[in-house]
Picture 1: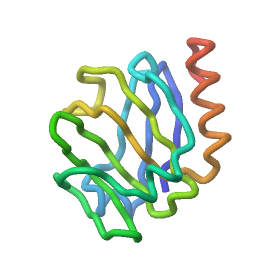
Picture 2: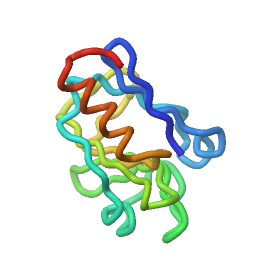
Picture 3: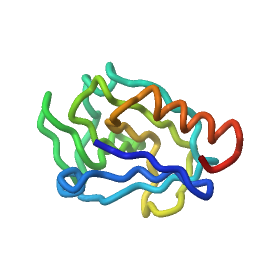
Length: 129
């Protein structure tokens, strides 16, 4: 499960210790101005990632964690329970703390509605929450 923290215009998605091992990544830092939209995504999470895993862990119907490439689309996943998944669509380009570009990030959070509201408040206010 991922914890979302917003500070200084950056959304930091912190992975649990086990998820760090499975996803081969400790955290993602995304500038708020790189976020195009955020929504609840259980159906997308249930369908699983498209393309090849690179690097990370993928056990169908159990866990998807890490980076996935499908043609020119690149996604980051950290989902065990699809019912708690959110999708963050990003604008093109590199962003802080991440050495590669992602088009979408799908992560499992404790409370999807609350996390989305937190991100949307920060986006609409242009402030750190």
